[in-house]
Image 1 (tube, each protein chain N blue to C red):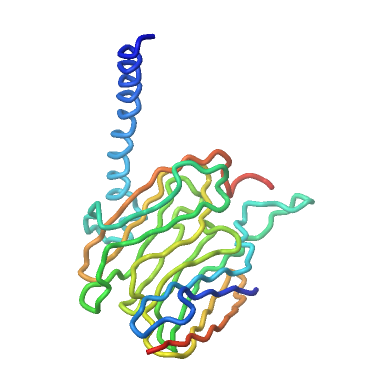
Image 2 (image 1 turned 30 degrees about the horizontal axis):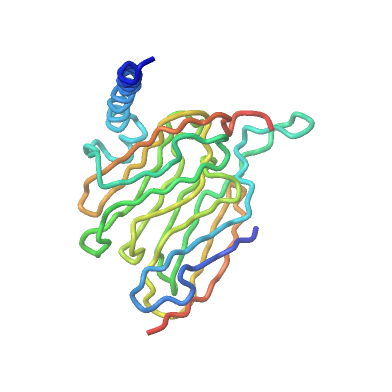
Length: 107
Length: 152
């Protein structure tokens, strides 16, 4: 599971609102599909996603099969200090993954 | 057809189209208050219309990845911020689609994602504010090819 992360604007000023775009590679299997042999494919969706900014949680999402495959999440945070954004998520098969992005805040 | 006759004809069509839209609105209001899923979330506090803006396309070719944006007009200060947004689907097999949680550090109460929709339906977004009030908005989407249930 990998993710692509984009910050808009990429170099925000202190106090500016930054848009965070996260695109995670994940099937978000609904549990309603069948494979070529007609066997049911088990449901496997990302059920929790958390974004932390220098260790402080700024955004959290409970997801379900109602979210498209390769989920895209766009949300915001206030640029307070340079540091690191940590993205963490877990799916129904208890597979965890995380991604980091550095944020450089100019005065 | 003369020009005025055509205008009368168009006005009549317009009136015919306006009627189902009115009945649709009241159906949305009823779903907000009486739905057990909504009830679990709000604990019986009345859900008010307004402040929330749910953006969905009016019509989509397929229900696999429908762009959705929810935004709430809120200052997002520690005294007055949006705590969470819940998305409810009318017709999906999993009706509780997603929940998004914010903090004052979020800066803006707005989230965009892409959702699956199993057929034409009303999608409702309910926001819980830090002052204990609930606000909602609904959108009706026409889906020509639905997601979730077909075998592909």
